Length: 420
Image (cartoon, rainbow, N blue to C red):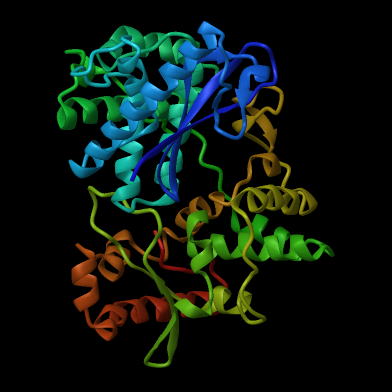
């Protein structure tokens, strides 16, 4: 059963009165009521204004009591009807009670569209990173709009141009956020019947194309391998970097590189797992990596220790700096003072990230393994098909590739792996 309570955050003589709507132990929403009061006239025990003869205080108390009854009844009815309750829902209900909005009117704000979309992602069990992406976009949009309250129908081509020009972020990030804004507005239009601009579908949200894909050449990998490193955390980071250049994994899959995901087939060992990053509009693909050649050598004394993505990207730069991977290289580097990516020519180690390992794998092994062979090994159409697939059949072709890679390793040709 939903309950509404009140509280103050400030000790000033003109403190805003907040309300807290509790749906269950894990679900609470807070909003300003629009009313203010002096701390001296507030009861922390009853969480209401003190009993006083003052007509103004009595009026505030009466309004709060009425709002409490209204919101609780409305929330409980919405729960029974299976309706989605969000922070924006609470704000809209407060506005309705005080005559600032229509009872029958739908929440057509962009922030409301974000709230509904994010809540649905949570209910559908979507990946945490996907939810965080939309939460980040909502936060940036809220900062951008300031005192303005953009509605879904306000999002059109003119808004998009202004948004991209005035948002104090890099072009790539701004475009990503704009894509998220367009997505939630389309969802509000299609799923909830919210009025939207006729030009919403025509808004161009260009995906940034990386013009500088930095990779490490075999001679540079040898320098990294031979570099004098004594710090344990950097030795661990070096192993991650060298391993990424051999198997081409994404940083989001580093938590899967462990003993739990090893399988054996006809005397050969493999790392096999489902990648974290899967697009809904594409077939699911299982990664199967033969542990042979350089990969086997790197793992001979155990797997690298897990590390946060941020620290890993930071440490691999340090490793490359020590290894003197400093050839002047064109690329984009994030400047600390404004947080934007700036294109220029920098010492190569400053441009290295863990994802460079993926580029390095593809570039250095393109003459060893063809893409068709990789797709043959890892291709699946759905999770259901994957569950019903005989693992030995799935590993059969991977073993053939492993044998090819093992032979290439013996011939001292590099690098080795099977993850595109």
